[in-house]
Figure (cartoon, rainbow, N blue to C red):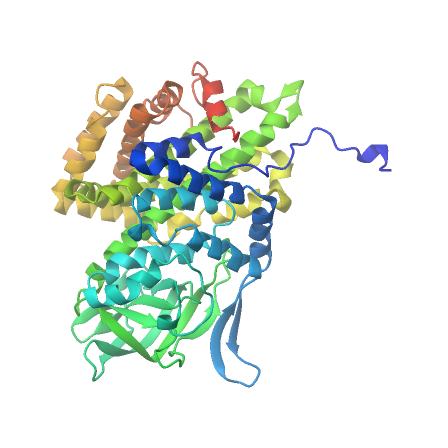
Length: 544
């Protein structure tokens, strides 16, 4: 019998055994909003099945084990042969395999594929975020390969397969493959035009030999990689297979794995090419143009990843406060804590709503939606990913000391939270990309303003924010120094317009009052007290 001093009281029960999808009202509504009615029943079943798996004890244990047992680099086998392999814990393979089988690399091959994949990504990466990298790279490689119809015909069926095969062997012998990406180099970082990796043409048309170093190569255990290198005609995109058709290993020397702040389960590496065989993708000198759509799609995944983190953070905070008592009552019923939780819930709902809107634009594929994406993607990437870290930190604080303990999962979530803002171009890169779109592609701004204009007249604070944004955009003097300010306002107006149209009145009112109307402090929990905050918090509560 346990001693009386060890009786456990006033602790929240573990948040397990629930449907992560069905418990997320915002995500459910977004899926219903953006998918064709004839798809909805099947997709709801599909996402609920994934949601129940994500909320299970087993899946959550996989996430813990994958992070507690990070990947190991094996450069040589026991006999001294160079093998350049990365060894992962079995839990990593289970997570990644589930992601593939759930269709997270198959969006291009399924009706409504981008919306259903986006929802799956938000659900499944709440379990563990690190394995999302190869899922993202593989998904995003398809449009780059489509610049070469022959390559696309060969590789796309493998990329969009829902079968995970972890073995390193020729791609033609596998039912499904994963892709990585290698663009950045130590001397250039985001300035990929400064890359020095060289590509020497070989006798066979379209084939090259690469020599150089990549400072960040994502998912080095993948079957193939899209990389940038300097060919005779300029910076060019190449496909680099890990294993050649004859079964021999391509020269792909993994020098080390990065020791990162978070994302511990995922292997990020430095690699050397030294006589590495590669196939050209697109024309020489057009490497950035060839790979740019891949970059844009991975940026959408950064937005989805941040939205996933936010949702998991607010879920844990609301769950804890629903059960925890202090000062004579439940924390969730205390006016000050309710204000904090409502503020967190607003941030999460705005992020999810915008992220799913981006996915729906990819499914639509019209010229207007492509123009919308050109401006909306870097805008959302800049703002949503930057909001993740302060939001997760505040959610952790809602759990008090319990949240600071590793077993809560909140420290892992906090360490992960800055990643999506840095990956695929950090904040300044996104802000400058928005400026380029504003200056060179007026149809992009027109598309975004058309989207925002659909909510015009519904809320005076949104109307005022739109007017102020147009004033900012009309003054181009010194706009680079104001780029972050402009992008922030653009993101908030875009989120506000979506919430005014689609969210319950309590949510839209609170967002417009705080984010657009200026009735807000500089920390979470400073919403106007007169708002219906209880409804906002209840909407975020994880109840299936």
